[in-house]
Length: 322
Image (cartoon, rainbow, N blue to C red):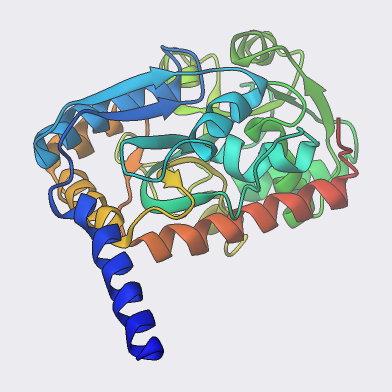
């Protein structure tokens, strides 16, 4: 009798745990973007959540909580109830890069969140000053190998994706370049246009005007596939060739650890419908991004692989924790 009573109690608990998911969502959903308004993550989040709101039949409120490289916003969600009404719209910098830089957090980046869906990717563009006498990635590698340490590449700052993309490229191509960090993308572009540095890995919108004006020369994109905004540009992987080379900013939606599976699946299904539309594809393409989608397991596996990749790059490059 005691055993059967225990089983009944477990079943009752399980049923009660699933009840909130059956009518979910019954009130507005809060999505924390761990960066200030107006940045790339915020823009993509608002494009997606506006459409996701219609798909789930409930208002989604974007809550910008910037600071500490995204850790403040991520911490807020890690501490929130796992009820589906508190979600995180996180980027690769928060989930894959910053944890290796020594930012102290109260959460575990791989265990404190429930993966829901990968939203999309936005690659960098490998650009060079017009005075650099190359027209391809392959030719650039040959030049860099002939002049080890002479070519300098700009970045948005130490530990940023543009910096690590340059390190990944150097490691995979077997070249040595001088890293010159700047305080943001704009000064990095200005100095590259001025010819003070030779190469820059930058987000497409950051350099598109300079490319059109001929003040910079694009060699390739760092994504796994060519992008809709510039289909004529090869990927680094195919142009070098450096098989498997990929470096992109990416975004995903997560909940706190322990989010009920029924809630996860409902959000995942709705997000995949949104991401499959031509509408969102066209909107994201303006910023050089492309929608992803997939299962929660797909996101979990991708996140882990990306986290491990950047950790290995930083270790090999001797990039130390803050």
